[in-house]
Amino acid sequence: MKSLFVLIFSLTTSFANGNQCRELFNFSRFLNLGSENEVLKDLENEFLDSGDMEAAAMTVGSKWQTTKFEILKAYARGRSRLKESLAKNIYRPILEFGKHSLAEFGTIYRAYFLRQAMDLDFFRWHYVETLHEKGKDAIGFGSHSYPGLVQLMTRKQKTSSEVISKSQLKVGVSNPWVQGAMVNISGMSYPQLSAHAVMSLIYAHIKLAKSGIRNTMNTGEGGANFHLALLSGNLHELRKAVVAYEQEANGLRLGSLEHAKLEVSVEELFRRRNELFSEFSSEDMSKAQIIYQIGSGLNGVRTADGGVDYDVLRDLSRHPNYAGTQIKLRQAAKQGASVDAKKINPIAAYIRGIRRGTNSHVTETPDAWSTPESLAQTILNVRAITQKPVSIKFAISDINETYVLLKTLRDSNALPDHIQLDGSGWIRQPGTGNGPLMGNSARNIAPATIILNTLLKKLGIREKLVVESSGDVETPNEAMMLLSMGADVVGSARLWMGMTLGCRRVQKCNSGACPYGITSADGSIMTLGLDPKTIGSKGFTAAKSWQKDFSDSVAKSGVTDWQRLYQQIPFNEPNNPLMIRTEYDHVGLADIFPAHKLVNDLAPVMNEQEANQFLIDMMLTDKQ
Image (cartoon, rainbow, N blue to C red; front, side, top):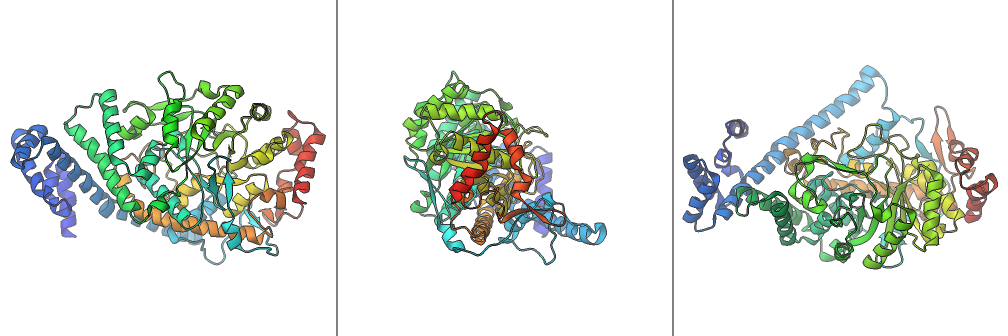
């Protein structure tokens, strides 16, 4: 303990005095750098004499018969590992202690002083946090039941949860990806998520696949290069590309201290990557399914004139973990993409093709999908070039506009293999890590799912593609509700941030100052404190528990399969086992989303008779 206080005091003094290397000499015994400890001692002495780090490195390099650049890298590596050691051994334990202490105090305070329970929003999130912390859904006796909670009235089981869990769906015709009874990881881009958070998610994703639970991981619109590089483990290729980009974009001087820090940052990232994935075989790694989302910024495939670089896309799609391409038309929370300058590190700048030190904000729609006709051509081009499934993502605001879009794609023989429907949540606003406070540009995901299903039926194309609904899904019953309303698959970002990464909803996502390292800037003590092995393992256990809860719920609803659930228990069936809790009773989904309201919403594209036919008659016919 005494040495810990000495460490903190001396380190603080070193930084306060502006000394760049004193802390490495003082605390080299805390690091596992081998012979580099002696090198750092010599470097400190030379630096104190000359005051020039690069000159000192030149002198020490001659003494140790190595290059100046290698000495600079040893210095950068020592600083990086010291910071990582502080983050893991001091910062993170203090953070965890504070978190658990406040959580326990909050429970006692609500019970004995406020004498009131959590509200519905916090109760749902408590379920997610419990999964992350305990690896299972376990709460104390006498928990509350909240108005608005989706609950399941169990029926006689027709099959086991094990059979439900093993049922898989193939998405696409050419090189389809595999979808199991599991919520997908919706788009969360790098560097909106830190590198450690991305690695943790990939780890949980691969381990789920290894255990037989298949789903997809969407890159978000920041580009696929980072995710694919982590999976392939090609350090040299990424390091070379990032250095070259920094040379061209920011005038990086080769052999400089900044160059050394850049190379070390990439090397240290891949060191952690190799430690994390060492338990997986090549067969395990091949099961990762990455969906490359292309947004309005065309990050990763943007040409100089703002078009799609299909040659680059072809090269990316050859990666064995590249499962498909998603064209993001719009999301529910905001239009376009925004990244704060604090998060734009050299790797992110290279992947996105932007400059460091400037905020990135793209709102305009690219020519590649500015009209339904151009979107149709882009879908055909992407499918032909990648030979893999194509998805589109959008949110419904104007129903007629959505209908025209889908009709154009049908008539152009350019239907996507998959549609991800976004929408505002059951309880919360649509999620984004960097958007306006009241950002909501679309309908609630529940009625939007019904509307999309109805439009697809009217156009005669419902069976030709897979629909994934995403928007504030946290509990298995909420996922079942969307499946009952017409979705084939469910996706979520918020759920994965909570149960896998341990998000505590501090709401610092956009600033790069997330204390848990989930959305903090790479290289920060917060990010380094997030251990991907620890968090990834907890995330896998939590996700596996969620999937078991989901499979159990599907089995208890009396259906035989999670696939096409809306054909077995459509939302408007009077005896639907899914119900919404009220203050003293339960009401059916059909009461919450009445036919007359949906008919009125669909009026721009179909008359009342048609709407009733598709909403009620066809669903009941499907069920029969």
